[in-house]
Each structure stands twice: as C-alpha cells, then as structure tokens.
Length: 536
Image (tube, helix red, strand yellow):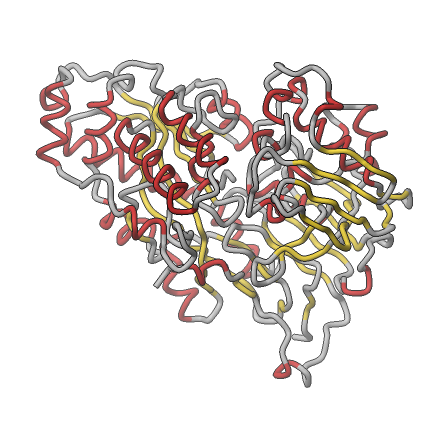
C-alpha cells in the first residue's frame, strides 16, 4: 500500500502500542476519552474500493470491518464472519456471518459483501487495487472486461448470513486479505446514489466498523465517534477520535508540543534524537520500501543504462545518517526484510541478497555508454514528491548527489497528495518519490504490483516474462518452487530497474505516554478500537 509503508518471520508480530497490562491497573482513566492522531494528509478518497494509501486505510479500517480483523500478532480473527470453513483443496471458503448492523441500524448481510467485491472488480469502478480480488474465481477476466457476466465471479451470498468464495488457486494469505480495505463491504444505497462522491458527506459515510464519521473539515480534521451498532461495541472505549489532516510535519510537531495532538508519525529528522531522549519517540517494524520510480516512457529514462546509473550513483547510508536519521537500512533490492521465503523461518530478503552496488565508476561508465559522458547533453530531470518536509530533504540530497557524481541537473517539484497521485497514474512525471508498505505478510504483495498494466504500476514498464512468473507463483503450491519464481521475478525487476530502491522503512511514532491500548501493524494499519486515555 502506498505510503505518504534480526528481521526474520517474527517481524509478523504487531507492534503493540502501550497495550493494557496489570501494571496499569492502579492508573485512572481520563474523564474525557478523546484521542487526537495526525493522519498526515487530506485523503484522496475514502471509498474502500478505490483508495490505495496508508492515510486512507487508517480511516477506513476504523469505520469499516471485513470478514476478518487482524489481532496484535497479525493473525486473522473472526470479525463480521464469526466462523468459516475451508475445503480440503483450499479453494472454497464458506463464511458464516454475524447478525450485525450498519451504523444507520440496517443489517449487514452476505449480499453486501458480494455486491461490494463485484463492484471493486467491475471495470467501470477503475479500482487500482482490484487485483487483490483476482484470487477469486474469474475475478481477473471480469475486471479486465473479458468476462461480462458477474454471476460467474466466485463470490456469492448463499443466504443473508452465508458467503461462499471460490478461489482460482489455494491462497494461504486470503484470510489476511479479508481484512483489507478493498474487500470491505459498503452500503449499497448511498454508493449507487452518488458513485463518485458518496464518501464526501459524513451522513452518507455509513460503515460497519467500530467508529463512524460525524464531521469532515476538509484539509483540517475528521471526527469519529463510536458506532453504536458495532457488534463489539463494548470494547470501544473512546468517546471521540480526532484525525488531523496536517501534511506539514513541523506543524504536527508544534501541535503535539502544545497539547493539540497526542500522536503523529515520521517526525522531522532533526528532532528524532531529542524526542527519543524524552521517551516520546518509539521505533518499530515497518515492512516497506522507500524508492523512486522512473517513467520509462520518457527519454532518457527509457534507457536502462540511465536508470541503472542513477540508481548506483547515490550514497544511501549517508542519506540515512545525515537526512533521514531513523536507523533505516539501505535498500539494494526491492522486497524488504521481514517476509518468509520457502519456509517461514527463512527471510526472503536474506535469501535473495543484494541486486546492485553503489558504484560511481560503473554509473559514470553506463551514463557515457548511453551518450551522456560526465552528464554532457543530459536534459534536466525533475523529481516529483508529495508535499512533505522529509520528502523534500531526501529529494534535495539526491539532487546534490546526481549533480556531483554524474553532472546531471535536477529540479524538484512538490504536489499535494491527490494531485501527486494523479500525476503518477497519468505518467505525468519523470522521476517520482514513492513508498510501499506490504498489504499482507508475503513477498507477493511487493512483486505483483509491477505486472504490466497493474493498477499500482505507475512506471509505464512491463515484462512478459515477469508477468508469467508472478501469475505462475500465484498458482504454485510447492513453496520452494514458488519462492524461486518470486526471486526470479525480483531479479528481472532489479535488472530492468524501473524503480530505484532507497531504504527500508522503520516506523517512527511520536506519542503521549497516556495513550494506551491502540496497536499498529508492521503493515501500517492502526486499530483504535481498544484505545484508551489515562488521567494525566
């Protein structure tokens, strides 16, 4: 999922933020149970079928609930589905649903799930994440418009409270996907009444999760309160969640220090050491990669030698030490640490190793071979990033490195989140900042996004062999063969270099000590349903 995303398989455990224990028994709850968190930007959309970013997902996962919900150990637990059975061949899932209600008091049924999933797959919806439903029988041909009959898609409501799903191939992480926003149900009446803008009006933002939206001050704040009809309402202790939409990190820091904000992420790099000494900064696992994308449809970035030269001509460790400062790891490959290989005890990244080296001499040689010795004749490049002081400083450092090391002139352009996403989708850029956090705990979540024409592949790049490997891996039951296919796919990606990995994420959270009970996944999701505030 887009981010504004020893490390072995234990990285799957959630980072539990201040979860209750016997040590807190003597502490008193605050009279006002109100928590303020900075989402970080105005959401581009709050339609679960269309959103692609972490900011949007944090809101959606607290206003909606899927068939499953992940616990603090990142294990799928019953949610709207109170139980399920899986056929011996791993292809048929039968979910028994609870008798739950939407936030307007109407019943949530299996028909809502069937309709929402088929809507996300429908070509006219143009969901960039529709491929998360390609695991369902006939999901891909229906999404691509090759199959016109939605009744042939492998999801159907057997009755009001039984949902049957037929998969194309056994998918071990399918129950994790059932917690993902794209697979959330949506309230059909309001969506059909205004397909493009239904989510803009809090009165129409009818969900089935622990909270409901009561106000949205655009570019400022979203207010959530408990959903009185949530099936597990008794565990929701907060009176209100104030979700701020502040993209200026210095402003977020000021709000935190003046008491207006309880919690925000990614503090200014210059403040990390101070906040850590004060006990306010917490570092945790974040399974994701910060990288730059190349628009391979534009010259000179259509030349792989140029892309490789740019990739090899920066000093990642210096960038981390002097600019980012969060203890991140240099990325010399795309898939991060923390994901299993053929067996869960083996780490995919450790098995795959590095794919390239930082080598200035080799970079200069490649650039000369491409016709630009010492950068002569090379057109000015533009780096696009979404508005953020941290992204700006990283871009400035890379701008300086490319100028010093390759003789290339670089301009910087920043855009607000929605405009930036549109520019990427429309290939209206040359080099663009990007980040990806895993959607589930498997290397596939980092590799299937680069198939030709994929909804999140905003580079213009494609490879027939790469596509074949990804689709074959999705169908392969032998874990060793599957792992090899994924490694082979990453080899193609890193050989053709449509993207430039920069570093592997570490999550940096700044939080007041009296905020308890919420937990965050290493995949970036935050569950506020069990959060509470102590007296302070």
